[in-house]
Length: 137
Ligand code: CMP
Image (cartoon, rainbow, N blue to C red; front, side):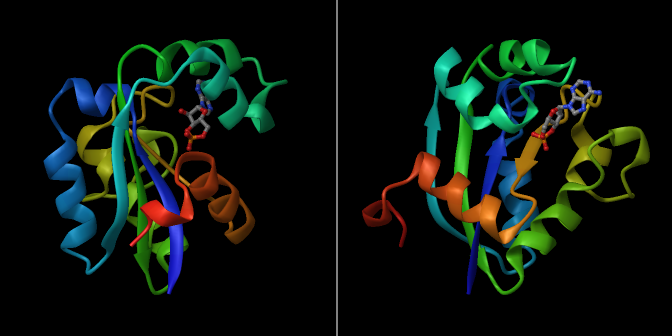
């Protein structure tokens, strides 16, 4: 069984979409192995998105991710890294398929409602970024 990290971003939490988004995962048989709500610090957001540091949108991304609380989850299931990405839809909501989280809820490429790990290595690192192994069950 794989694990992957999912973040419901500030725009999703602000609009009370947490339950609707979690339903999209649970309806597909994906388990919530760990979950918490937290206010990211600037240092946490910069560290989490360090891979994007050189991108022109990095400052905007950090501002957005620290604007208000997020909900972070470790999702568990078979092939869940790819399945989570399929359920989220394309990064740019304008290109996201019907029924995906980003098509249904996201406002723009910057405020795109959810994050999901994009590879097994990222999933391992990103789950460990937010959760101790004792918190995953
Ligand atoms: P995410 O999947 O969390 O990974 C990196 C994030 O950077 C991405 O979702 C978007 O929120 C953000 N991002 C990617 N491209 C752009 C862009 N062109 N402008 C603003 N934000 C972007």
